[in-house]
Figure 1 (cartoon, one colour):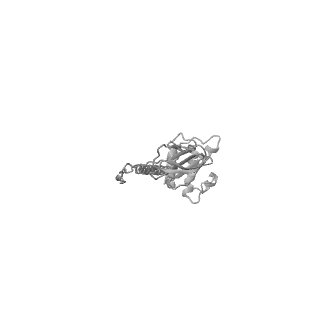
Figure 2 (cartoon, helix red, strand yellow):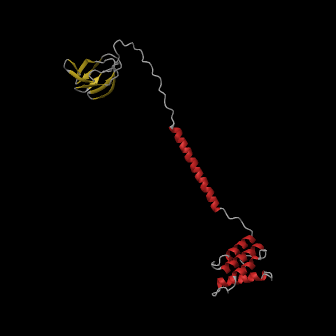
Figure 3 (cartoon, rainbow, N blue to C red):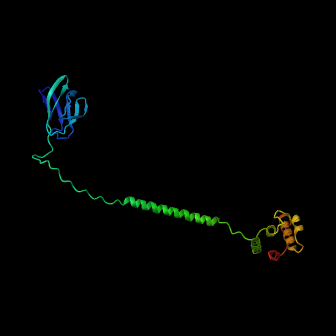
Length: 235
């Protein structure tokens, strides 16, 4: 829609039939300076294009200056959004719609809780297994430890350095059961401290030394027989 005053000032109006509250675009041929008015408000202006709106259901008049020409009677039509003879009765309020109960947060919380419980159970199970794996063997009495070591050596003929290991176990057993003996004593230092009837200890220590230090090794002896005699030290 083109508005004109005496064919001198023209302006293009969009939309052609604006309604109350619509943003109206008024484009002049030249840059324009509009007068302020309480009948409308200017939303924005850029050169010759002005965006405005009104909330009054009636036409309003533009006045101002463009290209040095003063105009005062540029009418902008505005139509009401109400129907003819509208009683202005507010429409009945619709009842609020029932919002479905939100289940997603509770499902997420349940999943997170189950995950946390599973993770805690896994950590607890692993720590329990690890504790069982690294649990120290029960401390055995010196007599029981010596008896088990001797029996293991006697039952395993393929064991390497059996005489030397039997000598080490015998030396450790004596140091554990006698206050005057230590496990770091050499055979030469230990033999004078033995009782005369403990000839089997002398045999074991010497056979162990020969197996460890002699190029010929220990002389042939019946290991099972000597081991059986060594077990008598326990009793």
